Image (cartoon, rainbow, N blue to C red; front, side, top):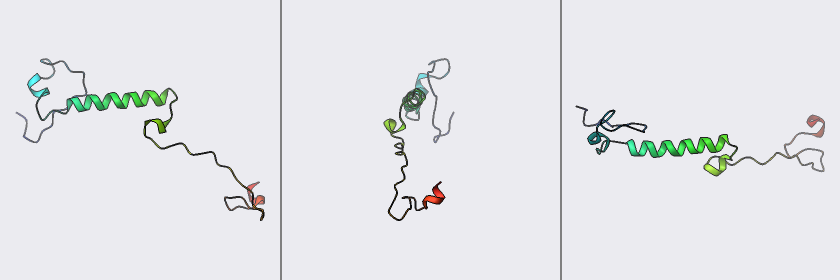
Length: 87
């Protein structure tokens, strides 16, 4: 028998009665339903990104805008370097 603090986990799909009993799979200590749901979400996000989707669409960091240097009247760029160093 498992200790009282044990958690039952299985990534799914599972064969009830062969791999795991229904009593254990449906017990309050089971996290199987949550594992399966999270696994589906993660696989969908990975496929989306691999197929060219943007990370910001799935809650990741938004892409940075392209860097542009602006010239000031003092001959420096917005990054603080002189035009001589920028060349």
